[in-house]
Length: 153
Ligand code: CA2
Image 1 (tube, rainbow, N blue to C red):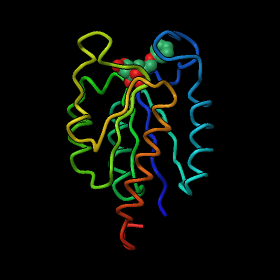
Image 2 (cartoon, protein in one colour):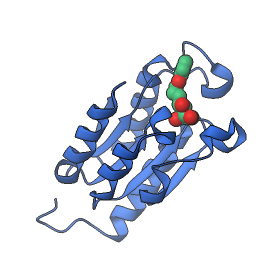
Image 3 (spheres, rainbow, N blue to C red):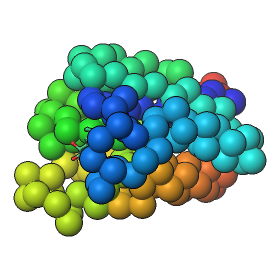
Image 4 (cartoon, helix red, strand yellow):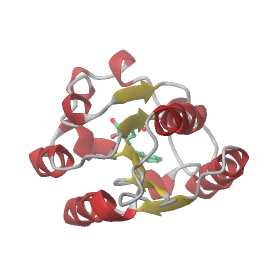
């Protein structure tokens, strides 16, 4: 089985350092460790990455088309601005779950629009690090219901 790609966008490398009122105290390494433990329970492999660069996210989304069985994406602030990421996701056949740590709808209005949501299978936001775990559980359910065909594995 191919891994699930978990892709994280700009500034998420700063988690745990500032803005705990929005993002909590866990670091991205803490989130990865927790998610790896949850993935092992449901027999999924994870490829967990972070970048501050929009084009790198686009490259990784394109890579996921062939190298991953599913995609969990926290595109950070690019969620609200990136048509390039929207277009890259349109070309993806595997299930994509959009995640956010914070409840973006309870924050500034510029965070209420997402270029990711229209091309995602579903969206989970507002549960802190648990958002990632819930996304993984959703993906695990989708993959159990619709297992990748043998040439997709
Ligand atoms: O809630 C989320 O997961 C977000 O994707 C986080 C982004 C934000 O732009 C989105 O609207 C919602 C921000 C990434 C983290 O930024 C930090 C900045 C300073 C310190 C810690 C994190």
